[in-house]
Image 1 (spheres, rainbow, N blue to C red):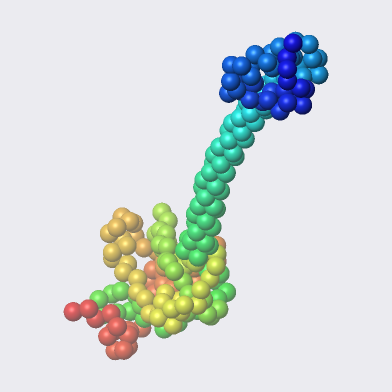
Image 2: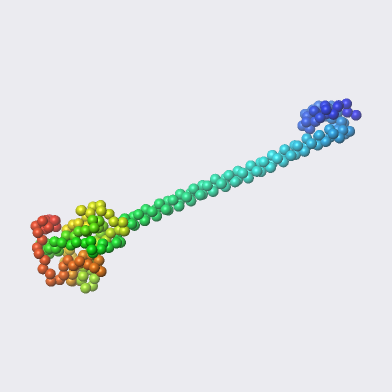
Length: 228
């Protein structure tokens, strides 16, 4: 029969369980727990606690791995979302640039005849027809499109972008002397010239028609087109 009291055995049980007590003490404890159900139950409780501790550790480790996986997925998702956001932002920015350029640089709007004023039509010494054109609305003209039909009618059509600008109005195509070289047009188009118009073919302004006699250009106008 064990000589150790229950309170002593219970103090020694953790050492016994960890196998760090002496052989003699170990023997005394084993003898005691054979006959003492209370101390035996305490030993079982120690075993259960260790099992639970290992189980909890494994569970925590598993949960930790799951959290790491979730965090990694979240980070990857954020990275993908950020990259996608950048791509969308770049696409939108590019689209806005294209829209802006289209509105301000794409010359698709024909200047209405009502704002076109043609004056001082005359003829240079080399035969070219010269005239002064002015847009009375104060907006610039970016481009002149030339159209020649099979009847020999020449149309000079001023065009602008959707968003008009007044920049360069005083020195641009909207307020200047310009000329028409009938011989060059005849050579390029292979057709005799019947008439020259300025503006939209639907409502053009006549500058010259075959058979018209034009006054001689003034010295001031002649000087503007003297390129020798």
